[in-house]
Image (cartoon, rainbow, N blue to C red; front, side, top):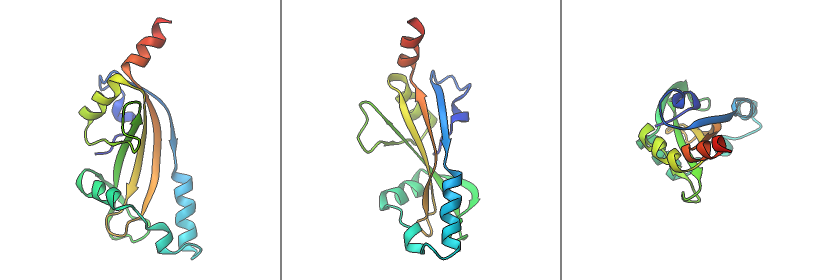
Length: 141
């Protein structure tokens, strides 16, 4: 499952989405360097086995072809980091899970694109979600 800031708006999750960062320019620079021969496939196709497993089992398939192998569609895998979550974050598998996590805490969310065929991976997007408690605390002051 992949979530994006627009998926949270109007969903009644009780969370406010903060700013977001799109890493498309950085991604395009890496792809360009690969196509020019300045980076090898080993340099850019180095996804961790756990990231590949998450992509295959819970990742959301996109409409975009892998920019490296062009044999498969990239999958989007979402992670959330916040207080009382493991240091390595939590792989978010559903909107309900995201709603539950954002009730109690502020979250930093990351969406990673992964190609299950060649192991290409790149951070696609980052955004913050202010949990319900955080919002109510700020509204009363």
